[in-house]
Image 1 (cartoon, rainbow, N blue to C red):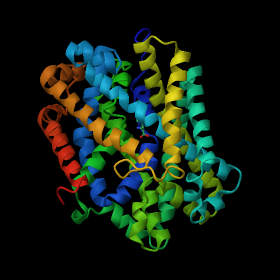
Image 2 (image 1 turned 60 degrees about the vertical axis):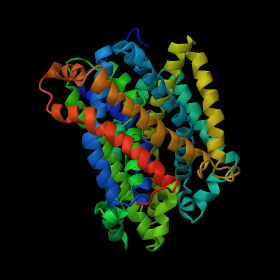
Image 3 (image 1 turned 90 degrees about the vertical axis):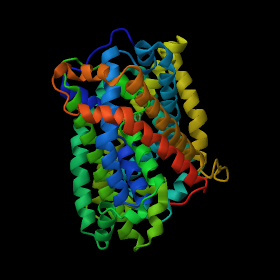
Length: 451
Ligand code: PHE
């Protein structure tokens, strides 16, 4: 991968490719259910504040590290300072943990897409349809395998570029469709309460876990703290403005997450008759509420189909980027051929993905610190390893290579407007903040303190 490093043609090419990795299930599936669960408006506010401060600084840092070294994560840290390549290794574990369960959810999307395609969209709207589906043994595993196989096939055939092209056309359509659905939902009886819950912050709902959840979501959604943006940065041309690219990626990513919340959270209020417990549904939220919206819509079968096709492609570009990362690590580090490392990654994904799928049914009795298997993988990567990687990245940039090294990289194309913010975030605020949040939320999770 290090040889023949090709560059993205221009700014728009870079922004769209990075946004293709960033925009995925994290925005459409994960963000709304977290926002619903962690207090609505207060979660949204926390997320946006984190995105424009901390997320901005970390994304600038990662892309600058990549562009400066021209290397992917593992080698990039080592290149800048030889003792620190372990940060790259630690970050590399994350996509390996995420990929398997990402494909389980990708499988659910594939199933819903085919259900709407075959004209049975209404059946997905009935109560219990989703719970019935994910608690089975064979069917979810079958869809998981199809989705994972497809991702692997694309990576293996090296046709990512084609898929990316398709998804570039689809992203704007996804945005327009989301706005349409959100407006439709807003006019349903009871939706206003949901919109208020989602937009207006209520500080009563604030807790440290809200902040931890928002921070984990930030990493996940923007593909940070796992080396991916470093790799993307390594393909970025020196003539492209890094700062404004980061702003655009963040804008895209946050905008789509916001719209997804605006579709899904008010519909929870519409269909639960005001029962707040429905907000805590977790990973199933999107799959339970949206089919009900489509069932109530004139032409809902077609809109539903279009929606799931778009989500499918958004997810696919992300899982390709996840798998591509892991495959190239195996290729580089274990000197495996591309085919062999693809097979190894497939085997690991099946080994971790099948239990994640079964955790919703046959293995539901099996809990790790109170979580089902999929939620545990999600927790350990987003709420534990990624904060640690982000913390180490801040320390590395702030005190080892010094922010100026990266500021210079950003300033190749002109003034770095967010320089002060970048310096202060990376050196002081972000590292202290991450440590505090990690400690407090762990204490909270284990019941030592109560907020
Ligand atoms: N950011 C992607 C999403 O929101 C997930 C992802 C994480 C993709 C890491 C690639 C790498 O769905």
